[in-house]
Length: 219
Image (cartoon, rainbow, N blue to C red; front, top):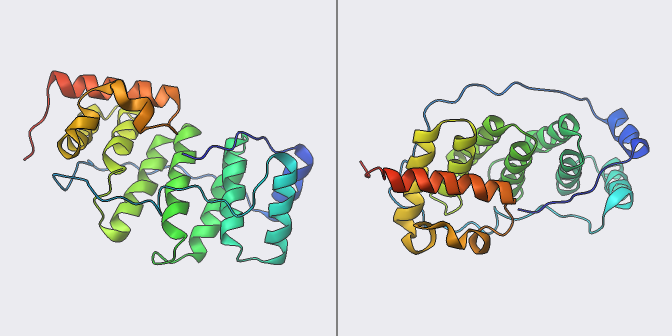
């Protein structure tokens, strides 16, 4: 997962806040979420990628993104990148508003729709809202009815954080069924999940241990 660990300055944030309406939203309760397929082999390289319109870092990057957005209201990639910068810089409300602005303008068939929604989910997870993250990823899956290889471990992580442990184990079982050489044991997590934070990999170890103790059978 792409991770810009740069904070936004008060001056730059002030300019951004003046241009954006801040909003908060309480995540709605999730119904039971379990794998619909036995295997998840599909690769989605175009989905699981960072949205980077402009290279750079810090205030210089933020100002460059703002300039483009001011000139081009439909600068979707730049707005999504700024949303990520805001959320990773400690401004989750601003990041949510920017992400939602982009998604309102994108149809589900546009190239940016899937990577924007995928990154949005990760930013929500990493700002302490796994339920909202799960909602975005579930929306992403339903938009194309995919069986992508990123789904089992990602859903397992979010569900475990929500204390929905039975569902998390169901998803981990799907990962093992699909790639037993990768997920039966946690010794390859750092290799397989290089963009996950150490705490996220540690959480997945707990899911793996729960799966190993009582592996569910595919129905």
